[in-house]
Length: 123
Image (cartoon, helix red, strand yellow):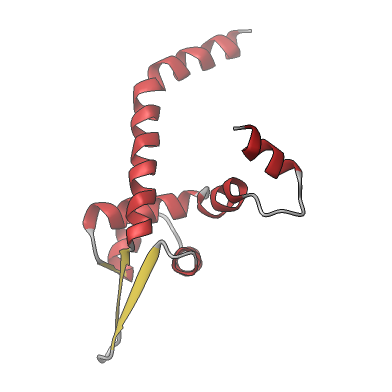
């Protein structure tokens, strides 16, 4: 743990924790990872529908970033109209497993978190 904090203080070195969390911490990245992990291969519009209120532009940017980092692969089929499918890579599957652990933890802790928030508001 100390090594992680030491690296984070030294801005001349790339901190892997900051770098990765910065890239995946927005809600669209995690929702995209979870949707693809749950449903497997999805076309763009199916993924957009699964996520919900994400704009086309934001989903495009999100998928481009996830693909650039190696979490998502994109396959283009030479058809008319062109068909593009997205799926998690092996690394993306690993990230999804970590995200599921965090989601499980959050679900289990939710009553305590809500209770704590209520105490904070009363004070």
